[in-house]
Length: 193
Image 1: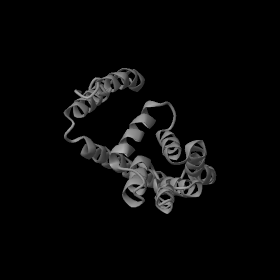
Image 2: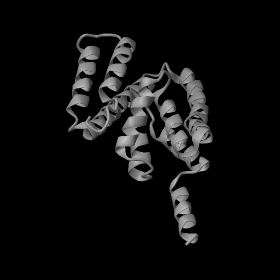
Image 3: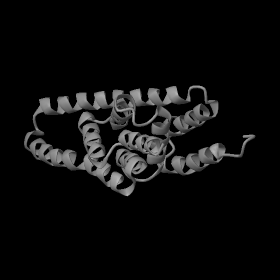
């Protein structure tokens, strides 16, 4: 009788990624996302491949990450690490997302300044930018899939999109207004919500 709770506790702990797994996973995300699209790769690796989170919980974390200042993916790695291992998990995930990519970026930066006058290098970078735009658009469609029946969320998304793209409002005021409005609209109001 006492063996059953222990074995179920062990299976729950086995499902939770450890510090090393968080570090390796976030390093994999960082190295998969050349030219951008880290949110897409995070979703693909964390939700689809490793199945650590559902799409809904991932989108929730991504929303929280985008509402706070700083790079979205670093905020997201803090969120993911803290869910599974608390503060040590956050530190491991952030180290994974930053350590090796930062080192590689510094080396590539040195090479770029040596060869930036070559036209082929600039064309290569333009191609990478186009691929990054496609990955960002793909992530948008993945988020749309989660909210396709939530008309309030779709309305908020359209209003924010129109505010930024059509009316050319600045990002910070839109976030400062839309964030609290959206949170108040979704604030739990009890069983009869």
